[in-house]
Length: 183
Image (cartoon, rainbow, N blue to C red):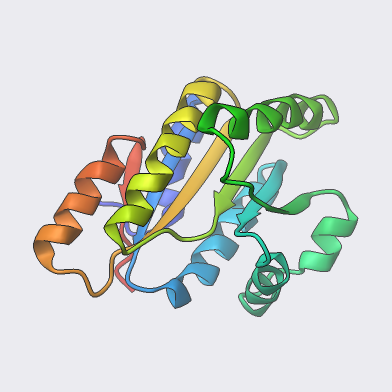
């Protein structure tokens, strides 16, 4: 069966108790906020602590986009259910993931059932995808078997079919599933 919604991709793994690391391939960055809103809403409904990784200087713009997609960011942040964090990608992948590991344990001890993490979109440039994949691999290594649900957006719209297939192949190596919304 081909999944038509993000929930259909993630739910089976959650029912098994697995960590889920899903890539979502989007036609444009404009398609991302509704996908993120759906992901975070699902996470909140499952007592997840929500974390969003922004590029440096983009946290406020990400808040605005998520609000426009129907999320009440101010309430979620005030309740301690959501953090929007500007990511430092100038460090090594292993150093980048370490604080998230500690934060996960803190959030689980405070009563959350899992961390639901998503980030800024990557692509469509080849070098952007290549640069982020070591971070994806470090994330998978650190969180495999732990209570983390991750959504990693990639922009593939406008790519020629061979480049799109190459991105899909490269991204699939670092993720459990790939989801391509049809809408």
